[in-house]
Image (cartoon, rainbow, N blue to C red):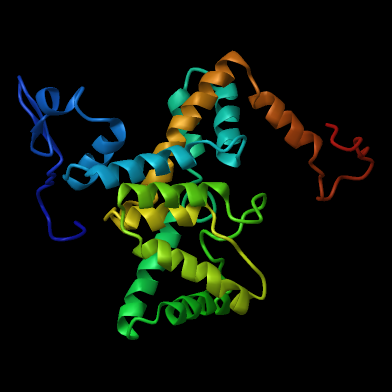
Length: 273
């Protein structure tokens, strides 16, 4: 049984022979190694196009902005995995990346799709961006869904990374249409939600990347790629300065058993075993 119509696997990304490796039509050794930075190479692999100066500046800025954010859950999962299997860094990196969903790392994709939806609605309603943004926010509220890329547990005013990414985009000559859409959503939220939710980095990333033509379907890959670099740094530190078992200990100390126990069972002290 096959899914889809293709019977031959095809790819336009890479081929090779005994003497040459070809990536997206270019010779890897002669045209790319030593001639292109990794952020630009990522874009080239993804699209088959060379990044122009605006795309390069914006993409590299977003990778730097989202790579590191301290002992977040993905980092804790990775460090505890490496503590249990110090010979398997690849498994520990995977443990950190597997949680890339709608809450952690995936909000950039959700926000980007929201912005594209609002842009399409704006074109359909005669160019009224505020109305399209308000309708989109109202629809999310009616469905009891979060507004992806808005609000932050620590940065109650705008996430400081937002303005810096917007500044990089402006100075590099990136398109500002999706920045305007992101700000229109922020402006629409108080009237619909009855409270303010400010832009965070997960909305800023798609706002600037869509402005340079980055594919919306690959938006989640940007924070995933960036966070992989951070995970490797944390795992290298874990090997030198272990914290994984300490993280596990802290979790066990704060946990409470809420199930039933057999007759005569002595309840341990809080956090005990």
